[in-house]
Length: 88
Image (cartoon, rainbow, N blue to C red; front, side, top):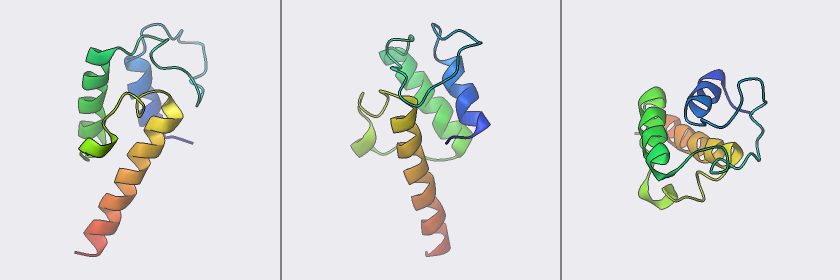
């Protein structure tokens, strides 16, 4: 699934998710408090934490719908970045 850093970042941006509730892959992020300003803040946090840039083609509310969708997008960028660094 995802790493601990992602879990922490997600929880920091979900004000309506109780601390003792599991962050499930299909959790509706909007329902747990991720609004448009929260998306921007989370985007900046993710880019800083993982040293990546989320590209325009994946910057949509659909990408920020659930933790699973967001992690898949983030993982894809991380993998592309690693492959790009290996094959300049």
